[in-house]
Length: 496
Image (tube, rainbow, N blue to C red; front, side, top):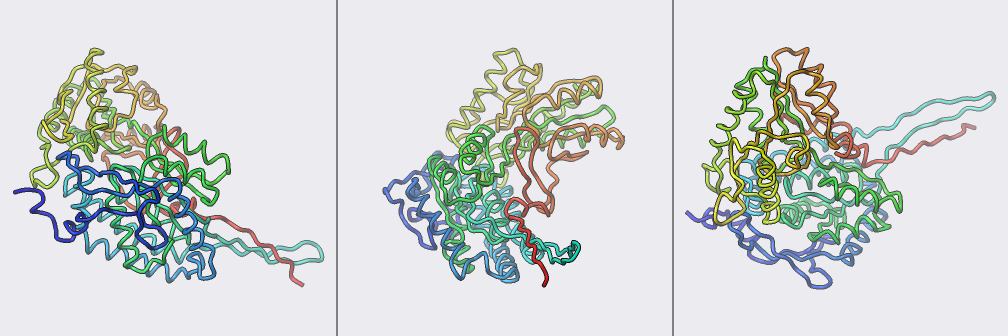
């Protein structure tokens, strides 16, 4: 059965015409008329032509967002209760359209439908979670006095202004919501720039927000390339940039934003160590290691791509992870048997193959997988496990962003902690041991924003996420998720 015959009517209708920019509540073409093709990574066929935003369009969107923030009936002055009710309604609307969003995500990104459905569920829950926070952003009130005078002092938590949200292609819908939801919860307005590889669910989200009643200009969507994102970073009307993506691009954004000292939050790259001690539940650790490394086609910044196994059980764990890799079914997202779809693009496909070929050339061994494409058409790649790796190899030091795990044996706790922390990244890490003292002690020594003990990828929107070192600035989600989207104002009044 063909993929097209499985599409919902709503999805077919959405793909039946070119996609435009969302600016000030209206769908408009790019000023220069340029478009780009968004491609199905399973078939390499164009899904639809999308308007390509330029710096001129970025300016139009920022002006609209600024007007929506500053005008008399500004979004920032809507009551917290109004924002809360609206956010909850949007969460329900997303959940009602789970299959529609999932199909669009799978077509555009390549991930399996099952995985995409999970992402849609997270997006819906983000709106509901922050709906609760909209009414709870409180300041403090403090009585003050000096000899002969009394004061009333209080703090207010206020919206920053216009937020530029720049998001990656690995979780297009959820990453868009990571930026949009806390920003509008706090009363900010947003210009969202989705990745050029995966603009479709961001555009559909824009449609849904208008349908739900979000006022014009509060959320604007600018599909396009890096020049549009750079224009937002440089724009004097943008008060904050929220970015998720590579460390390389994150550094450029931080440098660009420094000119005007606009606020920046960054969730960047990772190269997470996953440590298995000999006393671990090896069945659980093997399954967990496979999940850690191969989740989302390996295209996840918190994946456990560096596997360290205590020497006495190294061969057993490697054999188990290799078997798990070989058991993964690589195929089209719409095939129910598929557990791993294609990589997102030709560029990413070539990059991952290049790293694996380089490791083999350097003397490493493939215990599972292949350095070559897994199909004649589409950007498919087999889950790969590499042994005989040194700490100096590029496959060990660089973020590959593909289904590639390297495995290295270790002997002592101090040895493995030093190796695990020997990276410029610090986004995630994991430890497997039945001895909870060992697990917590080692976990406490790992320099990472998230540390999993005897599990991996367990997560919730109530928990903050972010990284140490070159894995980023700030935290998203949880009770900390509003901090980077608000200003604190102190007011001191003399009582007469």
